[in-house]
Amino acid sequence: MACGTKKIKECNIRNYSIYLKKIDSKTYLFSYFEYTGNNFDADMKKMAADPNTQKWWKETDPCQLPLPDAASKNEIWSSMEEVFHTD
Image (cartoon, rainbow, N blue to C red):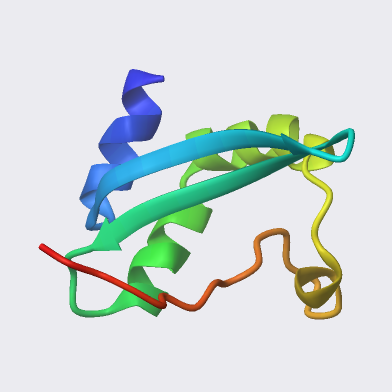
């Protein structure tokens, strides 16, 4: 996983966590990260172009079933609205 975490950092992602939660016999993933760069789209394209990332996604994407809002946009992850934050 070391090379994957290196690419994540190169793409200006920090404080990245993935959580697992079972609700009504369904298992959900929730991820959180902080983006520290200045061009999110460019950094995400950089990550998507990485052969190791592509290999990882090929292995893990079939395990992730998107919620309807993401599926309607042909995406895997749903965005969430932050409703509270404190430092």
